[in-house]
Image (cartoon, rainbow, N blue to C red):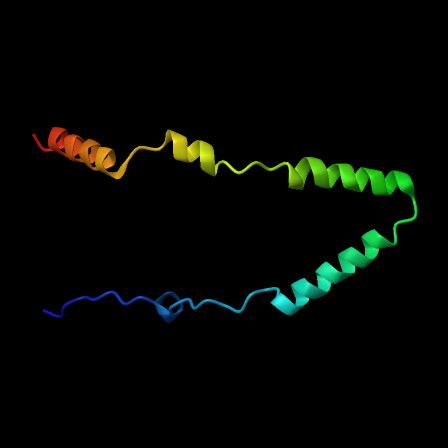
Length: 92
């Protein structure tokens, strides 16, 4: 008796490779310089003030949580002991 085999179609058999980035670093630098040029040429003081307030509130005030996370963290030995105890409970 002939053995039945299922073969995966070629479209599913291909490996997906990483593509080139959508935006190159040169393009990012170009956009950065365009943004600086636009901001430096704003004539309306209200618009400029609102832009400054937006940057202050949303970009500059982002706090780094590293110190608080560090203080809440446990030592490596404590982590190992907790893992060891949890594994013992799981496999007893």
